[in-house]
Image 1: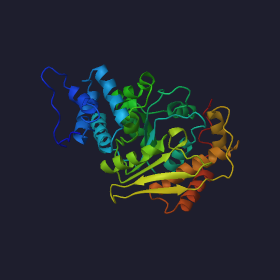
Image 2: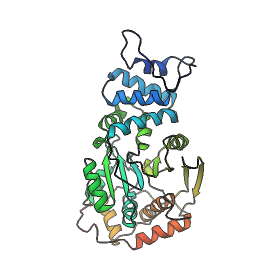
Image 3: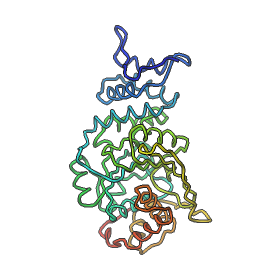
Image 4: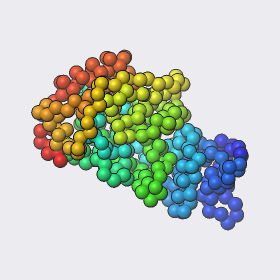
Length: 348
């Protein structure tokens, strides 16, 4: 296997396309191929974002990475390229970076209530995500609209929403459209690609706390390592319900934690909140969610999901010093919520 000088970028051979060396690095066979260095990954993704790569090269690149499996150094380089391309305002300060890329299929998106509770407590939350790449899922934009809210379309709207409601959701299309296009390739390629991991790690506003929900627990260690390489003060990864940052209260929750400040990586387990599992609802209804918020209907699963997800954020943001304290504070925020806030929202 070849070694890469971490500061040297590959050069194309005479007559080659400039991106060809990156395909060659990954596809040179079992003995000749290797992973990209962080600098190479950053340059490769920058070229992709600038549209300097042929479609056939892009497909080969993504699938070779998929077969090899991406490294933390590669993900860190990819993220740095996306950040530079996003042109996020340097003076926009938030407390929590919250990614929403999966959509919900089995349960309602109760995590929206978690975000509202946290913002009401005074935390600034920036949410980013992508939508529509997997059929038959309820994504955040539609959920927001059902509650009389709306996603942002650019950084100016993000600033306005953070000032007025404490949270803002900017879809990936609004700050990294080329990356959003790559996520939409999943139905074409038939497989996830490294784009699905790197998108959750972007943290474009450099929040000190990064929360992530993933489908596959084996990827947690990769996210921990990458978060440390990117200098994140705290990254917390869970196997979220449906892949979102939402705790399933029927199961114990294992949190994979890491910090670039202390260099530590650890795991923490939150016990299940119920002895028996709840029955999955027949359909997802934002109208039902609204009535639960108003207190006119009850949903023990949904309320527990919203409260315990908020508790996770309060703990990771060092607002609460223990799991019990975090759950107690989140429960208090839920009981004291403004039940009239969404009275004008219709829901579906």
